[in-house]
Length: 278
Image (cartoon, rainbow, N blue to C red):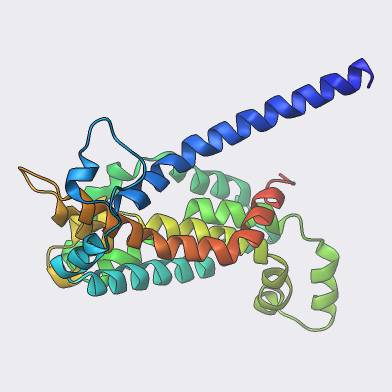
């Protein structure tokens, strides 16, 4: 082997070692959570800690689902996450099409102002949003959990960047055949934008399903609690049932893992292609 080949091989080995090390550091907490969900409480609190449980037990899962109506919590979280995801796919795709294809005075300025809202921390608008929902009588309802998230500047930006990579000739051909704007969007743009739509769907579903703070603010009754709020019942002022908390946390990640598993091909492709054109 020449010196250049040896250098390339060495660089590749170092790169793989670094990548596998970072991946192990990232995945380690998840594996610890899964393994701890099968441990007894005394085994979890053992010092020095051990990865593998001395005795595998399913009692934590049974106790977690008996401690609270997690079936109701799951329904609330999934219903809210699916509703917000569907709403963002509709609103963001229409807004992105307008900013990517239609020409009107002030379009770019309006887009940059719209994009600038991403710089505003969510905590800043929580109180005004809560007041609006209170005046509407929507506190402790599904509307409070769903409506504020139906539009997204990030989703609009992501789809707009992808739409700009689609050749205009396809739209011109569709227009010659008599398609209007909505027909072009529905029949031409959206089918070609499946990777970007899947990417937005995964991001949105994960964000909404994992949200804790906003649900904590607008939800007060047990029937409206989400999974993330339900996890808080395992921790009180004096002690935490770590075994049941780990079991409930593992169960709460299953919908997200399922969504990502089925959408990962489009997700990776969408991330790759969405930034190809300014």
